[in-house]
Image 1 (cartoon, helix red, strand yellow):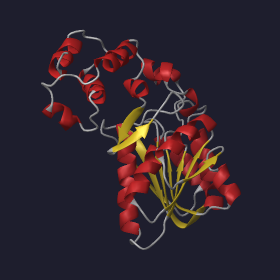
Image 2 (cartoon, rainbow, N blue to C red; image 1 turned 30 degrees about the horizontal axis):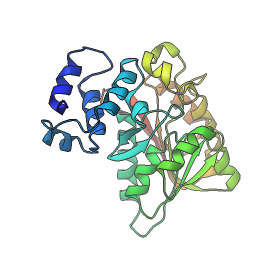
Image 3 (cartoon, rainbow, N blue to C red; image 1 turned 180 degrees about the vertical axis):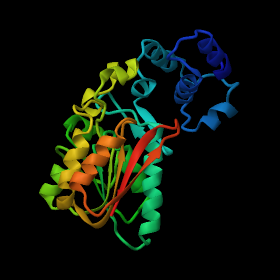
Amino acid sequence: MPTNREVYFQLLKENNKYLNKSVIISLLADASGFDDRMMLYSNFDREVKDTEHLFACVEQVRKGIPYQYVLGYSYFLGNKINVDKNVLIPRQETEQLTVDVLVYLKKAFTKDEVPVIADVCTGSGAIACALENEISTAKLYATDISQEALIVVKSNLKRTELLQGNLVDPLIEKGVKLDVLVCNPPYIEDETRIDEQVYKYEPHLALLAKPGTRCYEEIFKKAHLLMNEHYLMAFEIEDNMEKPLIKLMNKYLDGCTYRFHKDIYDKIRFLYIIK
């Protein structure tokens, strides 16, 4: 049986664009039952535990299927998140958004207070999962229009209440009042801006919107029905949306302050609205 090291360099020599160093390490870790990459590195010269499973996964990844869908899970802020073709694969940029929200929550609320939070367009439930684990007192909701996505979400969350429907509509129908709203909605208007692999395999319902600002406008104009007197709304956005979103905020959101933040790639990626 080959060792992890032997298989790693064997696959790396293929020079397959989908089998980069990080992907190979993830596949090897999974084949040996390691959740922690460091465990793999410390066992790099041991035999692969399940070569049959490993090479079955490799074959699918060679074809371009995202390795997270092949494995059935991804990681988000240290949490293992189940994923399939019905939900977007969690991204590093969204981790940054979530960390910023967690920092706000820990500053704005004491340990005994109960912030009411919603993860709108929850997808896999990755954001809500991180919030569950970090803010134990929070009352959490997660919404998505896709019933198939909510089946995946249910496997990732323990105490978040799941609601099916368009954006914030199910929250308003339920009479929920929020302190914090987090949302990573579909916002890509130009399909040519989407990576080929992403466009082929990830759900278009969670990616595309025409116009790109459509979801933000729907939320902004209904914010008065949903948000408490003081609140935070945190959004992931496309990097060309700053001007149209400012126009929409001026139209619908009185008395708010806002700021745009850049992501790790130095692109405007996040919008924070505070009242």
